[in-house]
Length: 184
Image (cartoon, rainbow, N blue to C red; front, side, top):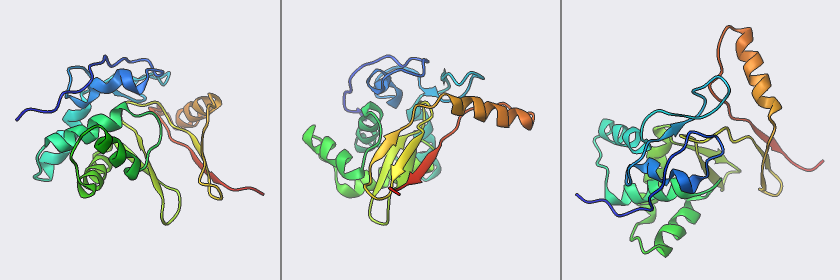
């Protein structure tokens, strides 16, 4: 079975590598994956291709790695930041991909179960997703009143994380912080 072609790119181990440069992590194009927190200073290091993680999850569920699932994964990897399932579906269809809404939602659920994506519940009706595998910590403030998501750049969190882990004789390998807030 042939997979659809994807943009080629080189995965880098620098924490600031742009998503587009990491498009190779899907396994549709050659290249290694990066995984957060494998070094004490919080840098990203190469572990295994993201498609290998996803294929393993699919195999454990008795499912196949189809071209549609491959394209959904590739599109997610090339995205920057948070996205909704509807945004993903629109992007896939605008790129000429024939994919159903059900396939997109099922693939997202499988990617969450595999530890590749994280779901952020904004309220009862809205959820956003972000790539976990191969990305640096995504610290966020989520405004409950406006649904706005604000990315935090707080290096002091890494120092706090490392200090807290050290208190228990551990080495921190990553973190995620989501602050849910609204206007006073």
